Amino acid sequence: MFARIDQALDVPLYQQLRNEIVRGIAQDELAPGDALPSVRNLASDLGINLHTVNKAYALLRDEGYVEMKGRKGAFVSQPAAAADTAVAKERLSRDIHQLALAFKASGGARQEFEQQVKAQLDEVFCEKE
Amino acid sequence: MESADMQLVMFALIATIPLVGAMMAITPLLQPDGQAFSVSVPETAQSDPGIRVLKQRFVAIIAALTTVLTLAAVAFCLMGSMKAVMALVVAGSLVPLVAGYGLIVRYRRCVQAIKRERGWQAEAQQRVAAIGEGAEDTPRAISLAWNWLYAPVILLTVGVAIAGYPVMPAQIPVHVDFSGAVTDVAVKSPVVAAFPVALELFLAGCFVFSHWTVLRSKKGTEPGNPASSAWAYGMFAHAQTVFLLVGGLVITAVCGLLIELSMIGVLPITGAVAAIVVVAMLIAAGDVILNAVYGQSGSRVFRMQRSDTLLVDDDAYWKLGLFYYNPGDVSLFLPQRSGFGWTVNWARPAVWAVMAGFVVATALLVVLCVAMVD
Image (spheres, helix red, strand yellow):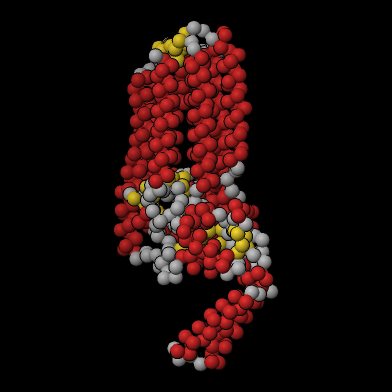
């Protein structure tokens, strides 16, 4: 897969990189056990500094998407490790709650929110099938 | 025999002029589509009339300069004026380079003006990198381990030096003039006998270091065509490292072994010099062909779809369009922007240390040469 970041966006680069790797896992472009590039190689190819990639990898590790194997580097985790933990479920619930609140605050209706969520779910889960 | 050797040397030296000129003339034509004279432009800008005229003018000027210098060198060679030929060879190797890079700097400003006029602006600043198992199937530079092949070459030269030392003459020719007459000699000693080995170690060190820089370099992946540009870059890096290894082994072996054999007296020094110069020219010619076939970063490997969107603009990091200076980029090495091969990120202190190391190693070799003749 190709990770794509955009330095012109307001989203921090480490967050963009984290999102790209999560997208790769969700779309089966990265399989459990796949090695991620070394921090130095990835930083060099993206033309950014080491700390940015380190932050993205740290975030992915905390979220359970990636595991570190000492000097061997970073590897994609087994899916169960990422999705089935209480922490992951709590985070998902919190994120949906925040999105729903923001949508309602901006005048959105429940039905419309549900339609948007369904459309996104269809897109993401269809790609996996 | 010696006169024939020196004629061959002169012919090969004169050939440097068209080789350097050809390399310079094709430089702006074979860069990736996302840039013109070191300015980031949309890929479709390659067919812009203003940019096409600049490219044609560049080729015409460099070709004319090269032709004049080559013909002058051939004329002086036929007249037997070897000093004038040598002066023209030096000028002929430098003038197309200096004129070419001068024109690139000048035309860069012209392209910047065209860019402003046409309103080409990057809405994004995208970067892409290959991640995961699929990336391993992409062609890539060959392993650094191949450089162990230098070991038998150097050991063979050491063996020849040890075996030949007893029969080595007391005074060893180390310099000849254009007629093939010896003008400098060195007194036989273990240090003198070891010089070809030191030269081989220096050359092998340079080639291994160059190979390592390719492996450590940022890859030339373009956001508009990430998969095809990554593939093309991989093929380019593969071809370049294979050529570097083969060319490096040949020139190292030829330099070390032939000089050692000429010191022992098995081969006349003029024969050794002729062989070294001819091999060096053949390697330089091979490099021009390789670059013409692949293009910089593999730009000629695929006929890629040209986009009219500018996804990234790195102009601010390329000082004068030639020197990359980006403190926010961890890369030490990266693909050249106005030339073939790779360059350095001058914002990294390690690059300055590497350059200092290279200067010291070269100075040591020169000191060894001087000490040998003295």
